[in-house]
Length: 191
Image (cartoon, rainbow, N blue to C red; front, side):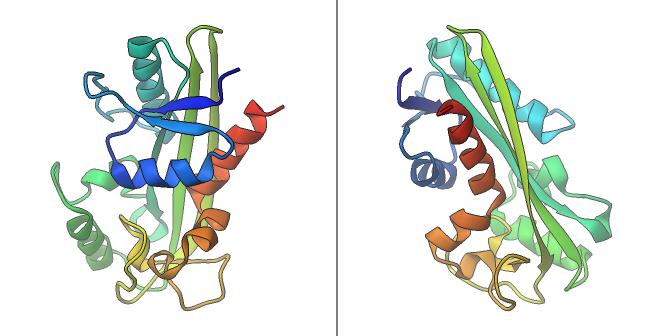
Protein backbone atom coordinates (compact mmCIF):
# COMPACT_ATOMS: atom_id res chain seq x y z
CA UNK A 1 0.00 0.00 0.00
CA UNK A 2 1.23 3.49 -0.84
CA UNK A 3 2.48 5.64 2.00
CA UNK A 4 0.95 8.73 0.36
CA UNK A 5 -2.48 10.12 1.13
CA UNK A 6 -4.36 12.86 -0.65
CA UNK A 7 -5.90 15.38 1.75
CA UNK A 8 -9.22 16.80 0.57
CA UNK A 9 -8.95 20.35 1.90
CA UNK A 10 -8.07 23.84 0.74
CA UNK A 11 -7.28 24.92 4.31
CA UNK A 12 -3.51 25.52 4.67
CA UNK A 13 -3.70 25.18 8.49
CA UNK A 14 -5.19 21.70 8.17
CA UNK A 15 -2.63 20.71 5.53
CA UNK A 16 0.23 21.63 7.89
CA UNK A 17 -1.43 19.87 10.83
CA UNK A 18 -2.14 16.66 8.88
CA UNK A 19 1.42 16.67 7.53
CA UNK A 20 2.73 16.66 11.12
CA UNK A 21 0.23 14.11 12.39
CA UNK A 22 0.22 11.49 9.63
CA UNK A 23 3.80 10.23 9.92
CA UNK A 24 4.88 7.79 8.43
CA UNK A 25 2.41 8.70 5.67
CA UNK A 26 3.11 11.63 3.36
CA UNK A 27 0.25 14.04 2.78
CA UNK A 28 -0.35 15.43 -0.69
CA UNK A 29 -2.41 18.58 -1.22
CA UNK A 30 -5.61 18.50 -3.21
CA UNK A 31 -5.03 19.31 -6.91
CA UNK A 32 -6.42 22.70 -7.91
CA UNK A 33 -8.80 21.18 -10.47
CA UNK A 34 -10.60 18.93 -7.97
CA UNK A 35 -13.91 20.35 -6.75
CA UNK A 36 -15.10 19.55 -3.26
CA UNK A 37 -18.76 19.37 -2.28
CA UNK A 38 -20.11 22.02 0.10
CA UNK A 39 -20.32 21.07 3.76
CA UNK A 40 -24.11 20.91 3.93
CA UNK A 41 -24.67 17.70 5.85
CA UNK A 42 -25.89 17.41 9.44
CA UNK A 43 -22.87 15.56 10.84
CA UNK A 44 -19.11 15.95 10.77
CA UNK A 45 -18.80 12.35 9.56
CA UNK A 46 -21.12 12.84 6.58
CA UNK A 47 -19.31 16.01 5.48
CA UNK A 48 -15.89 14.35 5.78
CA UNK A 49 -17.04 11.30 3.84
CA UNK A 50 -18.51 13.45 1.04
CA UNK A 51 -15.19 15.29 0.61
CA UNK A 52 -13.04 12.15 0.74
CA UNK A 53 -15.29 10.42 -1.80
CA UNK A 54 -15.13 13.41 -4.16
CA UNK A 55 -11.32 13.62 -3.98
CA UNK A 56 -10.89 9.86 -4.42
CA UNK A 57 -13.31 9.74 -7.37
CA UNK A 58 -11.63 12.69 -9.10
CA UNK A 59 -8.08 11.35 -8.71
CA UNK A 60 -8.44 7.58 -8.39
CA UNK A 61 -6.23 7.78 -5.28
CA UNK A 62 -6.82 7.00 -1.62
CA UNK A 63 -8.04 10.22 -0.05
CA UNK A 64 -8.68 11.48 3.42
CA UNK A 65 -10.82 14.38 4.56
CA UNK A 66 -11.93 15.81 7.83
CA UNK A 67 -14.75 17.90 9.05
CA UNK A 68 -14.32 19.40 12.44
CA UNK A 69 -15.68 22.08 14.65
CA UNK A 70 -16.60 23.14 18.11
CA UNK A 71 -19.67 22.39 20.18
CA UNK A 72 -20.67 24.69 23.05
CA UNK A 73 -22.85 23.10 25.73
CA UNK A 74 -24.37 26.48 26.60
CA UNK A 75 -25.54 26.81 22.97
CA UNK A 76 -27.05 23.34 22.64
CA UNK A 77 -24.03 22.08 20.67
CA UNK A 78 -23.79 25.01 18.29
CA UNK A 79 -21.93 26.01 16.22
CA UNK A 80 -21.20 22.34 15.43
CA UNK A 81 -21.01 21.59 11.71
CA UNK A 82 -21.45 25.33 11.04
CA UNK A 83 -18.26 26.23 12.96
CA UNK A 84 -16.42 27.63 9.92
CA UNK A 85 -19.47 29.72 8.97
CA UNK A 86 -20.85 30.56 12.41
CA UNK A 87 -20.69 34.34 11.96
CA UNK A 88 -21.73 34.15 8.29
CA UNK A 89 -20.95 32.35 5.07
CA UNK A 90 -17.59 34.09 4.50
CA UNK A 91 -16.73 34.89 8.11
CA UNK A 92 -13.12 34.96 9.28
CA UNK A 93 -11.80 32.90 12.19
CA UNK A 94 -11.81 36.07 14.27
CA UNK A 95 -15.46 36.82 13.49
CA UNK A 96 -16.54 33.26 14.31
CA UNK A 97 -14.60 33.34 17.58
CA UNK A 98 -16.08 36.72 18.53
CA UNK A 99 -19.60 35.42 17.98
CA UNK A 100 -18.98 32.31 20.10
CA UNK A 101 -17.49 34.41 22.90
CA UNK A 102 -20.43 36.83 22.80
CA UNK A 103 -23.01 34.04 23.04
CA UNK A 104 -21.47 31.46 25.41
CA UNK A 105 -20.40 32.32 28.96
CA UNK A 106 -16.74 32.08 29.97
CA UNK A 107 -16.02 28.84 31.79
CA UNK A 108 -18.77 26.92 30.00
CA UNK A 109 -18.01 23.45 28.57
CA UNK A 110 -16.79 23.08 24.99
CA UNK A 111 -15.82 20.13 22.84
CA UNK A 112 -13.82 20.07 19.66
CA UNK A 113 -15.02 17.28 17.36
CA UNK A 114 -13.18 15.85 14.35
CA UNK A 115 -14.32 13.22 11.89
CA UNK A 116 -11.70 11.85 9.49
CA UNK A 117 -12.85 9.83 6.50
CA UNK A 118 -10.64 7.51 4.44
CA UNK A 119 -11.73 6.40 0.97
CA UNK A 120 -9.74 4.05 -1.26
CA UNK A 121 -11.54 3.84 -4.63
CA UNK A 122 -9.34 1.03 -5.96
CA UNK A 123 -10.03 -1.31 -3.03
CA UNK A 124 -13.58 -0.05 -2.40
CA UNK A 125 -12.77 0.73 1.24
CA UNK A 126 -14.29 3.50 3.34
CA UNK A 127 -13.54 4.08 7.01
CA UNK A 128 -14.49 6.81 9.51
CA UNK A 129 -12.75 7.94 12.70
CA UNK A 130 -14.34 10.46 15.08
CA UNK A 131 -12.65 11.91 18.15
CA UNK A 132 -13.18 14.70 20.66
CA UNK A 133 -11.20 17.07 22.86
CA UNK A 134 -13.05 18.66 25.77
CA UNK A 135 -12.41 21.97 27.46
CA UNK A 136 -13.94 25.24 28.58
CA UNK A 137 -14.35 28.71 27.11
CA UNK A 138 -11.71 31.21 28.21
CA UNK A 139 -12.75 34.68 29.35
CA UNK A 140 -10.55 36.25 26.66
CA UNK A 141 -8.76 35.11 23.50
CA UNK A 142 -5.04 34.43 24.02
CA UNK A 143 -2.17 32.96 22.04
CA UNK A 144 -0.70 33.19 18.58
CA UNK A 145 -0.60 29.53 17.59
CA UNK A 146 -3.36 27.36 16.21
CA UNK A 147 -6.37 28.68 14.32
CA UNK A 148 -10.14 28.91 14.49
CA UNK A 149 -11.40 28.79 18.05
CA UNK A 150 -8.02 27.82 19.58
CA UNK A 151 -7.40 31.21 21.28
CA UNK A 152 -10.45 30.71 23.55
CA UNK A 153 -10.34 26.93 24.07
CA UNK A 154 -8.92 25.85 27.44
CA UNK A 155 -8.33 22.08 27.05
CA UNK A 156 -9.13 19.76 29.94
CA UNK A 157 -6.01 17.67 29.21
CA UNK A 158 -3.53 20.47 29.95
CA UNK A 159 -2.82 22.17 33.26
CA UNK A 160 -5.32 25.02 33.65
CA UNK A 161 -4.62 28.41 32.18
CA UNK A 162 -3.33 27.87 28.64
CA UNK A 163 -5.46 27.99 25.53
CA UNK A 164 -4.91 25.73 22.53
CA UNK A 165 -3.35 28.75 20.79
CA UNK A 166 -0.71 28.94 23.55
CA UNK A 167 0.43 25.32 23.21
CA UNK A 168 3.42 24.08 21.26
CA UNK A 169 2.47 22.00 18.22
CA UNK A 170 3.56 18.80 19.97
CA UNK A 171 1.37 19.56 23.00
CA UNK A 172 -1.65 20.37 20.85
CA UNK A 173 -1.16 17.35 18.58
CA UNK A 174 -1.07 15.02 21.61
CA UNK A 175 -4.52 16.05 22.87
CA UNK A 176 -6.43 17.59 19.98
CA UNK A 177 -9.52 16.11 18.37
CA UNK A 178 -7.72 16.04 15.01
CA UNK A 179 -4.58 14.50 16.50
CA UNK A 180 -6.61 11.72 18.07
CA UNK A 181 -8.59 11.05 14.87
CA UNK A 182 -5.49 10.99 12.66
CA UNK A 183 -3.67 8.66 15.08
CA UNK A 184 -6.67 6.30 14.92
CA UNK A 185 -6.53 6.43 11.11
CA UNK A 186 -2.77 5.74 11.02
CA UNK A 187 -3.13 2.85 13.49
CA UNK A 188 -5.89 1.36 11.32
CA UNK A 189 -3.86 1.79 8.11
CA UNK A 190 -0.80 0.22 9.76
CA UNK A 191 -2.53 -2.92 11.00
